[in-house]
Amino acid sequence: MGKQLLIQFTEAELQADTVVAWLLLEDGQTGGNVIQGTLADAARYADNARVIVSVPAEVIYLTRQHLPGKNRQRLLKAIPFALEDQIIDDIEDMHFALGTADPQGQYWVAAVRRQQMETWRSQLALVGLNPKVIIPDVMLLPGTTGELCLLTDAGRTLLVSPDGERWVMDSANIGLALKKIMLNKEFPVIHVRSYSTGPETELESLLASQLNCDISVQVILPLRLLATGVTENLPLNLLQGSYSHREKRRHQQYRVWYPVAAMLAVWIVVRLALAVVDNIHLSNQLDAIRQQQQQVYRQAFPTAKPGGDVYRKMEARLKELKQKRGAADASFYAMLQKLAPILADSLGLQVQVLRYHDGRVDLEVQLPTLQSLDQLKSSLSKQQHWQVEIQSASSDKNHVEARLQIRSQT
Image (tube, rainbow, N blue to C red; front, side, top):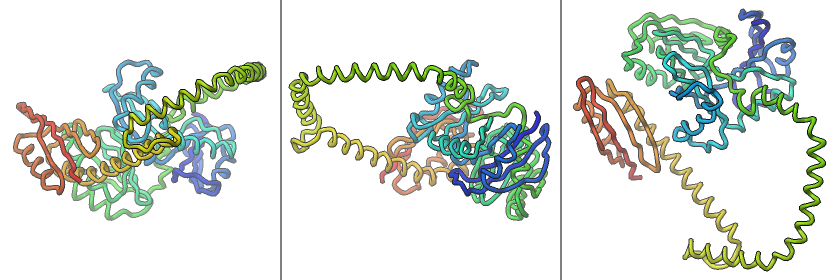
């Protein structure tokens, strides 16, 4: 693989003096110590090296999806529509990346705000760094079937479960994650590897009390552990689409046409100037259109006061709608905070689908028995201001599938 420079961003927001860590690798082997400094200091080690940047997974939505077909370009175009119901932000403001597929045909998919990508790219370009790969740090954590791997550092924990799922969370929430992992009987935990930057006695005792298996605890610098996940073909690279190196080369090829484009722009300006003369004769029609706009606005909002700028009035209405949407988003987190512990405490429960819309949660679950379904409804109904309804339930020999609807009355 030759010489590689692995740079770790520990903060999503970068400044000129932000501290980063880096490590040199030669043919996949570490070639020195982990060094800390500014991004400009790290750039001095990038000569003739493949630059890989590890970024915090907290600001990235990571998931595995079943996607039909194998044409990556078509799959990449389909991702925004597949994730539209799972992402609160406007998909037009998001950048999507497609990773590799596992043996079951599930693809790793990432979604990150374009503004965040622009921040990383601009800070790297300022110091002359041109990375080949930008990857969420949790994707570099090693993991194998039957093994639970954790990396704890500065109050955050990266986790790889035995079934290959990858999470990042506050260290205080590890207990809740372990309960969910233990409910997965298809992928039991055989061995636990816990890594941290210092003695984590609380983590070790927590693991020992929750899991009956072999546990190994090791003190290690996070970047050294992440370096073990660096391979020739990494599972996910955020530099895709408009951020890929292929698109950059294509943009450079188009530079030769810039003079022609400039001449065309001059010709267009001249034509537009001539069109302005014609537009003067249309001013009377424009006044008539404005009057029609006032009539349409009064029909849409009969209680609104007449007169004024229709455009500004409509803009104010849109602002009110956005504020209402913000309140709905906040209620989603409030409901999820109460809902998560109840679902975690329900033994044998598997969540198939969870949707939220305007103070309502639609939940599709799989449980072992009808009794456990009644217990789940009883636990949910105890929450203040919650109205719980079982919309459908079907039982099989081994399990019960049910759809519940939870409405918040606040």
